[in-house]
Length: 212
Image 1: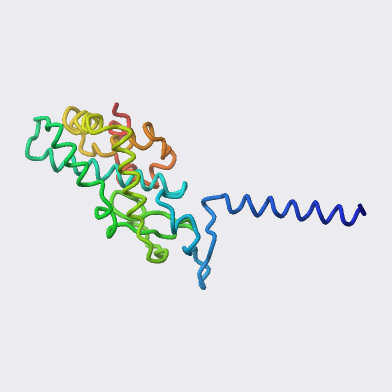
Image 2: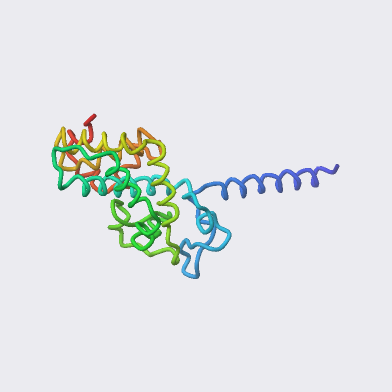
């Protein structure tokens, strides 16, 4: 084989490796619209998958944790200092882990060149950033919500709520609840991601963040 042919072969192989690595990076949008902004097109993982892309799984877990905590809190409101019955907790979580909970309240934004979820419990809600298409990520949030329910079980989720909200009386009891579920439990988030993901993390007192 001639030296020039060998060099060409090596160059092409390197380009293939670089191209493949770029497409494997979840933070790199595969498409851009006419304005050069990231967009979603049919065929993207973000378009057809029932599971959120890796770089949005922390967002999905944070939003699901927020709603589960909220559902238990509302069910518990009328029985403060009295533990809920098991069926009350099951009903509260079952009623919240449904696509309708998330379908109209969450979307995707382009924040600093990345696709992020936006909605209740998420820092993305406050970013004045362009929406990415009309894709509604309710199916992803429903998937992660059910994952939390399945991995922890209603009893353990209620015990976490009881520990932080009732026994310790933390005003922002949803923050350590999120930490225990998404960071320490499912490991879909890291402590480094938390301030830019979960609404309330940055403003939570140190005793809340360190509560165990």
